[in-house]
Length: 283
Ligand SMILES: [Zn+2]
Image (cartoon, rainbow, N blue to C red):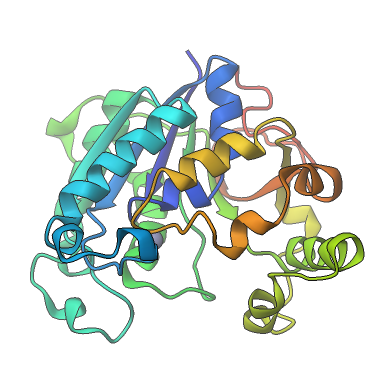
């Protein structure tokens, strides 16, 4: 059975990066497995309606419930929690916590991932790119570990007690806030609705160039944008349903930019340029 394994840093990352694509693949019969590195316990409560001392005290357990709901909405068959502690934003006190994901021994983390990959046997692995734009220590580590597990899981000399070697076919990283996407949505919102919630995003991007089109696989997620949003809204402590994300109508997104974009970071099989399918030639 064609299999996708998505590796994310925190609960909610699986819903903000490529959720439409995963939902579509799950509907198509691809077996989808999610691995989440941390409990997201260093995150702030970003939805005013959920901001109470009670929620703050139980944030880790609540975020786990939110994650399970979001995974169910997308059609993940299995969720694996690595159980590390959220390392916090760059230069925050959480960085120094010895339980933090970013502080764990690399071989131990890699061993856990190799064991999962050799059991799940994914054709496609979703990780992160080098994240220059959002240097969260946990996201940087997901990138580093994704590249390393691509090679280590296939190498019979590495972690011989952790299952038979397995060669992942393709390693992709989702690209969410590309300049071309934000610019297109921004202009369409101004044109049709007279305002845009993307001013801030565009200022943050500051003209930063996107990866060249030739490096990008574009997946048409028409019909799946709303399901991705439902998954995001399941993260009630993190996502304000009245926030700017949701002021952009789904039909506008599907009309002007119905794509989720991914960069191919590594491949062990022939991968045609300009493909519009992460599993092209695999299932
Ligand atoms: Zn994250």
